[in-house]
Amino acid sequence: MNLELETAPVADLDAKQRLRIWIRLLKLSRRIESEIRERLRVEFSTTLPRFDVLAALYRKGEGMKMSELSEALMVSNGNVTGIIERLVQDGQVVRIPVEGDRRAMQVRLTEDGRKSFAMMAEVHEGWVNSMLGSLDDEDAARLLALLGDVSINGRKVT
Amino acid sequence: MNLELETAPVADLDAKQRLRIWIRLLKLSRRIESEIRERLRVEFSTTLPRFDVLAALYRKGEGMKMSELSEALMVSNGNVTGIIERLVQDGQVVRIPVEGDRRAMQVRLTEDGRKSFAMMAEVHEGWVNSMLGSLDDEDAARLLALLGDVSINGRKVT
DNA sequence: CTTAAAAATTTTAAGCTTGAAATAAATATG
DNA sequence: CATATTTATTTCAAGCTTAAAATTTTTAAG
Image (tube, rainbow over the protein chains, first blue to last red):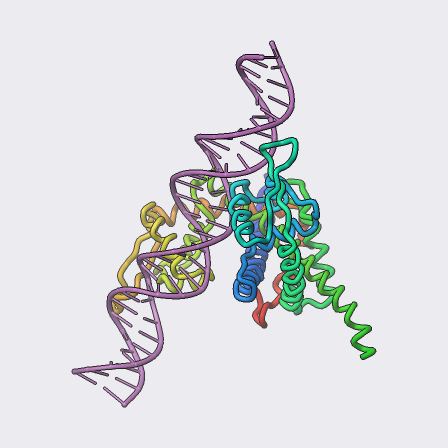
Protein backbone atom coordinates (compact mmCIF):
# COMPACT_ATOMS: atom_id res chain seq x y z
CA MET A 1 0.00 0.00 0.00
CA ASN A 2 2.64 2.42 1.08
CA LEU A 3 4.67 1.30 -1.84
CA GLU A 4 1.84 1.97 -4.22
CA LEU A 5 1.18 5.40 -2.82
CA GLU A 6 4.81 6.30 -3.25
CA THR A 7 5.52 4.80 -6.64
CA ALA A 8 2.34 5.72 -8.46
CA PRO A 9 3.18 9.41 -8.86
CA VAL A 10 6.71 8.56 -9.94
CA ALA A 11 5.49 6.14 -12.56
CA ASP A 12 3.11 8.84 -13.69
CA LEU A 13 5.97 11.27 -14.16
CA ASP A 14 7.76 8.70 -16.25
CA ALA A 15 4.68 8.27 -18.37
CA LYS A 16 4.52 12.00 -18.97
CA GLN A 17 8.16 12.05 -19.94
CA ARG A 18 7.71 9.20 -22.39
CA LEU A 19 4.70 10.98 -23.82
CA ARG A 20 6.88 14.03 -24.37
CA ILE A 21 9.43 11.88 -26.15
CA TRP A 22 6.74 10.59 -28.44
CA ILE A 23 5.42 14.05 -29.19
CA ARG A 24 8.89 15.35 -29.95
CA LEU A 25 9.71 12.32 -32.07
CA LEU A 26 6.54 12.76 -34.05
CA LYS A 27 7.09 16.47 -34.54
CA LEU A 28 10.64 15.96 -35.74
CA SER A 29 9.88 13.16 -38.13
CA ARG A 30 6.88 14.99 -39.54
CA ARG A 31 8.96 18.08 -40.13
CA ILE A 32 11.65 16.15 -41.95
CA GLU A 33 9.12 14.07 -43.81
CA SER A 34 7.10 16.99 -45.07
CA GLU A 35 10.25 18.77 -46.15
CA ILE A 36 11.27 15.69 -48.14
CA ARG A 37 7.82 15.27 -49.65
CA GLU A 38 7.84 18.90 -50.71
CA ARG A 39 11.25 18.64 -52.31
CA LEU A 40 10.46 15.36 -54.07
CA ARG A 41 7.38 17.02 -55.48
CA VAL A 42 9.03 20.26 -56.56
CA GLU A 43 12.38 18.93 -57.77
CA PHE A 44 11.40 15.54 -59.13
CA SER A 45 7.62 15.56 -59.54
CA THR A 46 7.33 12.44 -57.46
CA THR A 47 6.10 11.36 -54.04
CA LEU A 48 7.57 9.73 -50.97
CA PRO A 49 5.64 6.46 -51.37
CA ARG A 50 6.95 6.11 -54.91
CA PHE A 51 10.45 6.93 -53.76
CA ASP A 52 10.19 4.31 -51.02
CA VAL A 53 9.08 1.65 -53.48
CA LEU A 54 11.93 2.48 -55.84
CA ALA A 55 14.37 2.33 -52.93
CA ALA A 56 13.19 -1.13 -51.98
CA LEU A 57 13.44 -2.36 -55.56
CA TYR A 58 16.82 -0.75 -56.12
CA ARG A 59 18.53 -3.16 -53.77
CA LYS A 60 16.93 -6.20 -55.41
CA GLY A 61 17.98 -6.47 -58.99
CA GLU A 62 15.77 -9.48 -59.54
CA GLY A 63 12.73 -7.53 -58.36
CA MET A 64 10.14 -8.22 -55.69
CA LYS A 65 6.68 -9.69 -55.51
CA MET A 66 3.81 -7.43 -54.55
CA SER A 67 3.53 -9.13 -51.20
CA GLU A 68 7.25 -8.79 -50.53
CA LEU A 69 6.97 -5.10 -51.22
CA SER A 70 4.06 -4.56 -48.89
CA GLU A 71 5.85 -6.60 -46.23
CA ALA A 72 9.08 -4.63 -46.62
CA LEU A 73 7.39 -1.25 -46.62
CA MET A 74 4.93 -2.18 -43.90
CA VAL A 75 1.92 -1.04 -45.88
CA SER A 76 -1.18 -2.85 -47.08
CA ASN A 77 -1.36 -4.92 -50.23
CA GLY A 78 -3.94 -2.69 -51.79
CA ASN A 79 -1.72 0.28 -51.21
CA VAL A 80 1.14 -1.25 -53.17
CA THR A 81 -1.20 -2.10 -56.02
CA GLY A 82 -2.02 1.56 -56.54
CA ILE A 83 1.52 2.86 -56.26
CA ILE A 84 2.89 0.27 -58.67
CA GLU A 85 0.11 1.11 -61.10
CA ARG A 86 1.35 4.69 -61.28
CA LEU A 87 5.01 3.71 -61.45
CA VAL A 88 4.22 1.44 -64.38
CA GLN A 89 2.47 4.32 -66.10
CA ASP A 90 5.57 6.43 -65.52
CA GLY A 91 7.72 3.71 -67.03
CA GLN A 92 9.87 3.32 -63.93
CA VAL A 93 8.81 -0.20 -63.17
CA VAL A 94 7.55 -3.31 -64.92
CA ARG A 95 5.40 -6.22 -63.81
CA ILE A 96 6.60 -9.62 -64.80
CA PRO A 97 4.49 -12.77 -64.37
CA VAL A 98 6.08 -15.18 -61.94
CA GLU A 99 6.64 -18.44 -63.64
CA GLY A 100 5.06 -21.34 -61.88
CA ASP A 101 2.57 -19.18 -60.00
CA ARG A 102 -0.04 -17.42 -62.03
CA ARG A 103 -1.29 -15.43 -59.04
CA ALA A 104 1.96 -13.64 -58.37
CA MET A 105 3.70 -10.72 -60.03
CA GLN A 106 7.35 -9.78 -59.94
CA VAL A 107 7.99 -6.05 -59.96
CA ARG A 108 11.29 -4.80 -61.30
CA LEU A 109 12.89 -1.42 -62.03
CA THR A 110 13.25 -0.42 -65.65
CA GLU A 111 16.54 1.06 -66.78
CA ASP A 112 14.88 4.47 -66.49
CA GLY A 113 13.67 3.70 -63.00
CA ARG A 114 17.10 2.57 -61.91
CA LYS A 115 18.89 5.63 -63.24
CA SER A 116 16.29 8.02 -61.99
CA PHE A 117 16.32 6.55 -58.51
CA ALA A 118 20.12 6.57 -58.27
CA MET A 119 20.13 10.24 -59.08
CA MET A 120 17.34 11.10 -56.64
CA ALA A 121 18.85 9.03 -53.85
CA GLU A 122 22.06 11.00 -53.98
CA VAL A 123 20.28 14.33 -53.79
CA HIS A 124 17.99 12.98 -51.08
CA GLU A 125 20.98 12.00 -48.96
CA GLY A 126 22.20 15.57 -49.19
CA TRP A 127 18.84 16.92 -48.02
CA VAL A 128 18.79 14.69 -44.99
CA ASN A 129 22.40 15.42 -44.17
CA SER A 130 21.79 19.13 -44.19
CA MET A 131 18.51 18.87 -42.27
CA LEU A 132 20.27 16.96 -39.52
CA GLY A 133 23.29 19.21 -39.73
CA SER A 134 22.67 20.69 -36.30
CA LEU A 135 23.79 17.40 -34.75
CA ASP A 136 27.52 17.08 -34.32
CA ASP A 137 29.10 13.67 -34.95
CA GLU A 138 29.01 12.69 -31.32
CA ASP A 139 25.37 13.54 -30.79
CA ALA A 140 24.52 11.86 -34.06
CA ALA A 141 26.14 8.65 -32.86
CA ARG A 142 24.35 8.83 -29.52
CA LEU A 143 21.00 9.48 -31.14
CA LEU A 144 21.47 6.64 -33.59
CA ALA A 145 22.29 4.29 -30.73
CA LEU A 146 19.36 5.39 -28.56
CA LEU A 147 16.92 5.02 -31.42
CA GLY A 148 18.29 1.56 -32.10
CA ASP A 149 17.73 0.55 -28.51
CA VAL A 150 14.02 1.13 -28.51
CA SER A 151 11.89 -1.92 -28.98
CA ILE A 152 8.16 -1.96 -29.54
CA ASN A 153 6.28 -5.09 -28.59
CA GLY A 154 9.59 -6.77 -27.94
CA ARG A 155 10.88 -6.06 -31.43
CA LYS A 156 13.85 -3.78 -32.02
CA VAL A 157 13.35 -0.97 -34.47
CA THR A 158 16.31 -1.84 -36.63
CA MET B 1 42.54 20.61 -53.46
CA ASN B 2 44.28 18.34 -51.05
CA LEU B 3 41.82 19.46 -48.43
CA GLU B 4 38.90 18.55 -50.61
CA LEU B 5 40.29 15.15 -51.42
CA GLU B 6 40.74 14.40 -47.78
CA THR B 7 37.54 15.77 -46.32
CA ALA B 8 35.07 14.68 -48.93
CA PRO B 9 35.01 11.00 -47.91
CA VAL B 10 34.68 11.95 -44.24
CA ALA B 11 31.77 14.26 -44.92
CA ASP B 12 30.27 11.48 -46.94
CA LEU B 13 30.48 9.09 -44.01
CA ASP B 14 28.72 11.65 -41.88
CA ALA B 15 26.01 11.98 -44.48
CA LYS B 16 25.49 8.23 -44.43
CA GLN B 17 25.23 8.24 -40.67
CA ARG B 18 22.69 11.04 -40.68
CA LEU B 19 20.74 9.17 -43.31
CA ARG B 20 20.69 6.16 -41.02
CA ILE B 21 19.37 8.33 -38.21
CA TRP B 22 16.57 9.54 -40.43
CA ILE B 23 15.67 6.03 -41.53
CA ARG B 24 15.61 4.79 -37.95
CA LEU B 25 13.64 7.79 -36.78
CA LEU B 26 11.09 7.25 -39.49
CA LYS B 27 10.79 3.56 -38.80
CA LEU B 28 10.29 4.12 -35.09
CA SER B 29 7.74 6.84 -35.41
CA ARG B 30 5.81 4.94 -38.05
CA ARG B 31 5.70 1.89 -35.82
CA ILE B 32 4.41 3.84 -32.87
CA GLU B 33 2.05 5.84 -35.02
CA SER B 34 0.47 2.87 -36.70
CA GLU B 35 0.07 1.12 -33.37
CA ILE B 36 -1.73 4.19 -32.04
CA ARG B 37 -3.91 4.51 -35.13
CA GLU B 38 -4.87 0.86 -34.84
CA ARG B 39 -5.80 1.17 -31.19
CA LEU B 40 -7.72 4.40 -31.67
CA ARG B 41 -9.68 2.67 -34.38
CA VAL B 42 -10.35 -0.55 -32.50
CA GLU B 43 -10.92 0.81 -29.01
CA PHE B 44 -12.49 4.16 -29.74
CA SER B 45 -13.63 4.05 -33.36
CA THR B 46 -11.72 7.19 -34.11
CA THR B 47 -8.64 8.31 -36.01
CA LEU B 48 -5.36 10.04 -35.22
CA PRO B 49 -6.22 13.25 -37.08
CA ARG B 50 -9.45 13.56 -35.11
CA PHE B 51 -7.60 12.84 -31.88
CA ASP B 52 -5.04 15.51 -32.72
CA VAL B 53 -7.72 18.09 -33.37
CA LEU B 54 -9.47 17.28 -30.10
CA ALA B 55 -6.14 17.54 -28.28
CA ALA B 56 -5.50 20.99 -29.70
CA LEU B 57 -9.00 22.16 -28.77
CA TYR B 58 -8.86 20.61 -25.32
CA ARG B 59 -6.28 23.11 -24.14
CA LYS B 60 -8.26 26.07 -25.45
CA GLY B 61 -11.59 26.30 -23.68
CA GLU B 62 -12.62 29.25 -25.81
CA GLY B 63 -12.02 27.26 -28.99
CA MET B 64 -9.92 27.95 -32.04
CA LYS B 65 -10.48 29.35 -35.49
CA MET B 66 -10.03 27.04 -38.47
CA SER B 67 -6.84 28.83 -39.44
CA GLU B 68 -5.46 28.58 -35.91
CA LEU B 69 -6.10 24.85 -36.00
CA SER B 70 -4.36 24.30 -39.30
CA GLU B 71 -1.45 26.43 -38.10
CA ALA B 72 -1.14 24.52 -34.82
CA LEU B 73 -1.40 21.09 -36.44
CA MET B 74 0.78 22.04 -39.41
CA VAL B 75 -1.75 20.77 -41.93
CA SER B 76 -3.57 22.49 -44.76
CA ASN B 77 -6.76 24.49 -44.35
CA GLY B 78 -8.74 22.18 -46.55
CA ASN B 79 -7.67 19.28 -44.42
CA VAL B 80 -9.04 20.84 -41.26
CA THR B 81 -12.32 21.58 -43.01
CA GLY B 82 -12.90 17.89 -43.64
CA ILE B 83 -11.90 16.67 -40.21
CA ILE B 84 -14.05 19.24 -38.44
CA GLU B 85 -16.97 18.29 -40.67
CA ARG B 86 -16.80 14.73 -39.36
CA LEU B 87 -16.28 15.80 -35.76
CA VAL B 88 -19.36 18.01 -36.00
CA GLN B 89 -21.32 15.04 -37.33
CA ASP B 90 -20.09 13.02 -34.38
CA GLY B 91 -21.23 15.75 -32.01
CA GLN B 92 -17.78 16.24 -30.52
CA VAL B 93 -17.31 19.75 -31.77
CA VAL B 94 -19.37 22.82 -32.71
CA ARG B 95 -18.75 25.69 -35.08
CA ILE B 96 -19.58 29.11 -33.76
CA PRO B 97 -19.66 32.21 -35.97
CA VAL B 98 -17.01 34.71 -34.90
CA GLU B 99 -18.65 37.93 -34.06
CA GLY B 100 -17.31 40.86 -35.99
CA ASP B 101 -15.89 38.70 -38.77
CA ARG B 102 -18.35 36.85 -40.93
CA ARG B 103 -15.62 34.90 -42.71
CA ALA B 104 -14.28 33.17 -39.63
CA MET B 105 -15.50 30.25 -37.57
CA GLN B 106 -14.66 29.37 -33.99
CA VAL B 107 -14.49 25.66 -33.31
CA ARG B 108 -15.12 24.44 -29.78
CA LEU B 109 -15.43 21.08 -28.01
CA THR B 110 -18.88 20.03 -26.94
CA GLU B 111 -19.31 18.59 -23.47
CA ASP B 112 -19.29 15.15 -25.10
CA GLY B 113 -16.13 15.95 -26.98
CA ARG B 114 -14.40 17.19 -23.85
CA LYS B 115 -15.29 14.14 -21.78
CA SER B 116 -14.52 11.72 -24.53
CA PHE B 117 -11.12 13.26 -25.21
CA ALA B 118 -10.14 13.33 -21.54
CA MET B 119 -10.85 9.63 -21.30
CA MET B 120 -8.99 8.77 -24.49
CA ALA B 121 -6.00 10.92 -23.60
CA GLU B 122 -5.46 9.01 -20.40
CA VAL B 123 -5.55 5.65 -22.11
CA HIS B 124 -3.38 6.98 -24.91
CA GLU B 125 -0.73 8.06 -22.43
CA GLY B 126 -0.63 4.52 -21.13
CA TRP B 127 -0.13 3.11 -24.61
CA VAL B 128 2.80 5.40 -25.30
CA ASN B 129 4.31 4.76 -21.91
CA SER B 130 4.26 1.03 -22.44
CA MET B 131 5.49 1.25 -26.03
CA LEU B 132 8.50 3.24 -24.89
CA GLY B 133 8.92 1.06 -21.84
CA SER B 134 12.20 -0.37 -23.09
CA LEU B 135 13.87 2.97 -22.36
CA ASP B 136 15.02 3.38 -18.79
CA ASP B 137 14.64 6.80 -17.18
CA GLU B 138 18.16 7.84 -17.99
CA ASP B 139 18.00 6.92 -21.66
CA ALA B 140 14.59 8.53 -21.88
CA ALA B 141 16.02 11.78 -20.58
CA ARG B 142 18.95 11.60 -22.98
CA LEU B 143 16.72 10.86 -25.94
CA LEU B 144 14.34 13.67 -25.05
CA ALA B 145 17.27 16.08 -24.85
CA LEU B 146 18.83 14.96 -28.11
CA LEU B 147 15.55 15.25 -29.95
CA GLY B 148 15.07 18.71 -28.53
CA ASP B 149 18.47 19.78 -29.80
CA VAL B 150 17.75 19.12 -33.44
CA SER B 151 16.82 22.13 -35.49
CA ILE B 152 15.54 22.10 -39.04
CA ASN B 153 16.03 25.23 -41.11
CA GLY B 154 17.27 26.96 -38.01
CA ARG B 155 14.10 26.21 -36.05
CA LYS B 156 14.17 23.98 -32.98
CA VAL B 157 11.71 21.12 -32.96
CA THR B 158 10.14 21.99 -29.64
C1' DC C 1 -9.96 -36.61 -58.35
C1' DT C 2 -12.80 -33.39 -55.40
C1' DT C 3 -13.26 -30.34 -52.12
C1' DA C 4 -11.53 -27.34 -48.60
C1' DA C 5 -8.22 -24.20 -47.05
C1' DA C 6 -4.58 -21.04 -47.88
C1' DA C 7 -2.11 -17.56 -50.53
C1' DA C 8 -1.37 -13.56 -53.89
C1' DT C 9 -3.45 -9.99 -55.55
C1' DT C 10 -7.12 -6.53 -56.77
C1' DT C 11 -11.20 -3.99 -55.80
C1' DT C 12 -13.94 -1.08 -52.97
C1' DA C 13 -15.47 2.36 -49.72
C1' DA C 14 -14.10 5.60 -46.52
C1' DG C 15 -11.09 8.83 -44.76
C1' DC C 16 -6.76 11.67 -44.85
C1' DT C 17 -3.75 14.97 -47.25
C1' DT C 18 -2.18 18.39 -50.33
C1' DG C 19 -1.86 22.45 -53.54
C1' DA C 20 -4.47 25.21 -56.30
C1' DA C 21 -8.61 27.52 -57.48
C1' DA C 22 -12.81 29.64 -55.94
C1' DT C 23 -15.74 32.43 -52.57
C1' DA C 24 -16.66 35.74 -49.60
C1' DA C 25 -15.65 39.20 -46.41
C1' DA C 26 -12.50 42.63 -44.42
C1' DT C 27 -9.06 46.06 -45.03
C1' DA C 28 -6.13 49.31 -47.39
C1' DT C 29 -5.30 52.65 -51.05
C1' DG C 30 -6.19 56.16 -54.11
C1' DC D 1 -16.55 56.11 -52.17
C1' DA D 2 -14.35 52.63 -55.49
C1' DT D 3 -11.04 49.47 -56.27
C1' DA D 4 -7.35 46.47 -55.05
C1' DT D 5 -5.32 43.50 -51.87
C1' DT D 6 -5.41 40.51 -48.13
C1' DT D 7 -7.50 37.15 -45.13
C1' DA D 8 -10.53 33.09 -43.75
C1' DT D 9 -12.45 29.46 -45.42
C1' DT D 10 -14.26 25.92 -48.71
C1' DT D 11 -14.12 23.27 -52.87
C1' DC D 12 -11.76 20.38 -56.04
C1' DA D 13 -8.85 16.87 -58.16
C1' DA D 14 -5.37 13.73 -57.38
C1' DG D 15 -2.98 10.64 -54.71
C1' DC D 16 -2.15 7.90 -50.38
C1' DT D 17 -3.85 4.63 -46.92
C1' DT D 18 -6.44 1.13 -44.72
C1' DA D 19 -9.59 -2.86 -43.69
C1' DA D 20 -12.65 -5.80 -45.64
C1' DA D 21 -14.56 -8.23 -49.46
C1' DA D 22 -13.87 -10.44 -53.81
C1' DT D 23 -11.02 -13.05 -57.35
C1' DT D 24 -7.98 -16.24 -58.88
C1' DT D 25 -4.80 -19.76 -58.27
C1' DT D 26 -2.27 -23.06 -55.50
C1' DT D 27 -1.89 -26.47 -52.03
C1' DA D 28 -3.65 -29.83 -48.81
C1' DA D 29 -6.82 -33.51 -47.32
C1' DG D 30 -9.85 -37.08 -47.87
